Image (cartoon, rainbow, N blue to C red; front, side, top):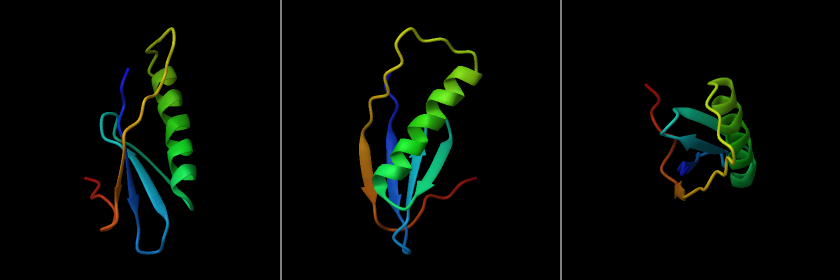
Length: 73
């Protein structure tokens, strides 16, 4: 399973990690903290959705955007 993670750096030097495939977002004071929190949320989401995967491995592709946070609709 491949899930992409996009990382946005805010003007206040905080970070937002986004998973577009699952519409999940997480924030942190560092890029790594935001990504780690999002990974936990992804696993929790997959488990709570009763989607069973024998070996869940989250492969990420990070894209760091410095022009603000994404719009959430």
